[in-house]
Length: 168
Image (cartoon, rainbow, N blue to C red; front, side):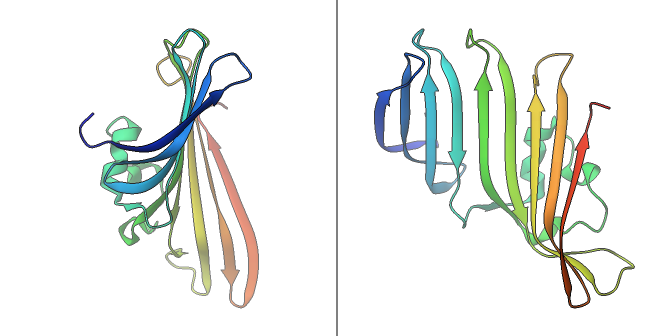
């Protein structure tokens, strides 16, 4: 396919009776992406996972494709540092047993230092953000997000984490 370059892929047997493929690929304009895919014995895809190199960075507008066209800023506080660039870490897709329906989509990325407006001396460094969509094509879909990082209050460092979910 256009825009996708496949390097050397290795193929092995999966415990489920299908096949595992892994190797380096290039897509989204990034090289050296570690790709792993499992194909069921029925020749349908079971899962795909990609891990990006540390240099893989995109802007927030491009992520709206993964959020039903909604801007990422709609889900985060106004002061969140979306203009600093977003480093892609990884994403994964998993399919149901028939290979017909997307069961789960997840994406993880990192953002530079984050300072809350009005809170001098407080900052979060090494911010990681993860989104998981369970059954994204079903009316019973569920969305969860985790934001974590090392907080700094003056000279004191604190590990911070917050979870959000569409499932009460």
